[in-house]
Image (cartoon, rainbow, N blue to C red; front, side, top):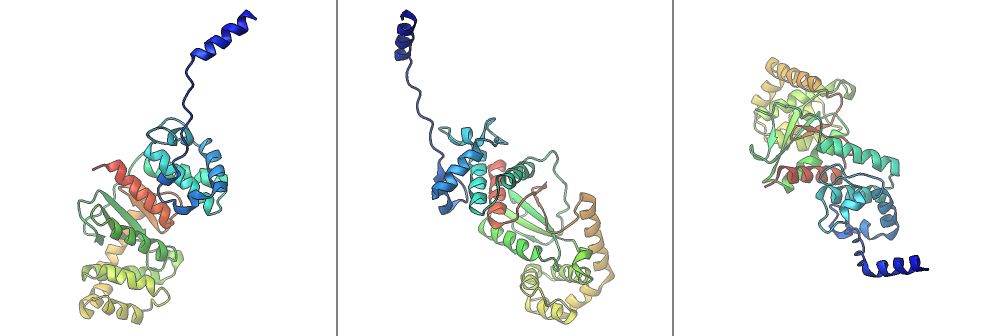
Length: 284
């Protein structure tokens, strides 16, 4: 009885711990209305409690994101969880994507990519430079490269995108031809307009189509044609291909963000989130 009484008295003397904060759903990057779904919230919390934060906070995503000052990395990881749940992804798929994100943001080693003299959109001193190895006959590049170009437009002061021509044999015999045309457009100062037209007219890549699209992009016909057919252009495309192979590029699009190879889903939301994460890591 005496022991019970002492225990009760001690309990009365111990101040009550404050209740843990809720997940700040409205602060999760790139989430939108999906965060308001109570079913998604409940499943998201379950996953947050099983996944560890890969940077800033040595705890679970849930513990890190519900702190008084949540870690930015935890907020991003929570955002990924909510977005992918809304897209119907399984817990295993989401866990794999979080591991891909950790590897993308904090790789063991960065790659050194030759950006000098390449087709570039954005400032030379950009905080974040995205290099994309791609070709004009790749159906995935057709979606992803314009997507990255749009993200650059929205972050024009801080981000640049560099296009690295990398023809892939699996995309057909025309891949080398269209890559050579891309280099010719670059030499003529009309690469990005040509880029947009080549992907917009993906089924029209024979020689006459390329000449027509080059003219529409503002390339001067005679120099464009000469550069397109030149042996020096063939040599340049081969050089670019060798560089990519040496880096370990095997397919397109392969993306590097400040020299960090990107792994994971190439949706607009995930690419944007990773690029904005890199801007956070670089700092002001």
